[in-house]
Amino acid sequence: MIKVHTSLNENHLEEIENVLYDLYPHNWSILYKNQTKIYELVGYFKNISETELEISQFNKCTPFTTDINFEYSTIKNEDWKNSYKKHFVPWNLNDFHFIPTWRENEFKNIHSNQKLLIDPGMAFGTGNHETTKLCLKYLIQNLQKPCSELLIDIGCGSGIIALTASLIGFKNVHAVDNDDEAVKNTLINAQLNQIDDIVVSKKCLGELESTNKFDVVFSNIETSTLIQNASILCNLVNKNGKLILSGILKNESSNIHQEYVKLLNEMKINFELISEDMNEWNLSVFEFR
Image (cartoon, rainbow, N blue to C red; front, top):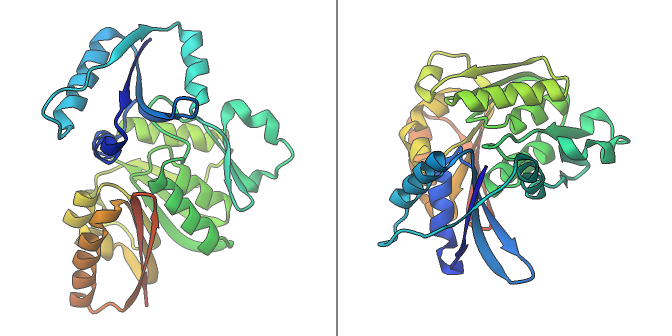
């Protein structure tokens, strides 16, 4: 296992976060070291050839005129497992807990429908990123009730949104992603939590045009894709349904609002727009009327 790392200029954090979001799924993490007050970009890769390829791809995506240089080190597999686990800690929203599998024993007394066990794999997180956390916050605080509504999680990644929805009472849940590893990871996490009633599939957004409509649509993907596929996403939502969009940088939210407000007005759909920011990220919710 190869570890690479470099210190980051705090003024470049937003640009680096944008690059990592474009590259998702990936094996990079941004860490903040309290002792030194320094931000660090860290990546873990299987071998040197994969490392060089990922660094090259990363540098091509940055807006900087010179490449970022990294320090390399080789770590044993066991050291990798322990290092990796340091980046993922349990967290909660209200009374609902998100728990990495290696910390499961600490939460034995919490009822199974109030916790989600997550094995993030090498490329998928535990929901700590703001884009996912905003979705989960809206889901848990606004939709927590047993219901038979249809819900779809588009760009499901680890499956954390779809699986949480199932645990809090949604009976008809679909999770889709265009990445094989995401689909595999979602199925693994469903099995970990003994959830066998969600539909997990590999699909692109364009393939959803002919699917059934849903009462709740989550789409946590990059802004450009949300704009390009606005018509598809809006047409997936049932009357009186909710369209929840994430993966949006705060300074791009006005572009999303302009595009979707115009489209929904053309479709003669009444709606209420709810917008919430968390650090540099935005969640935009269109509640159809």
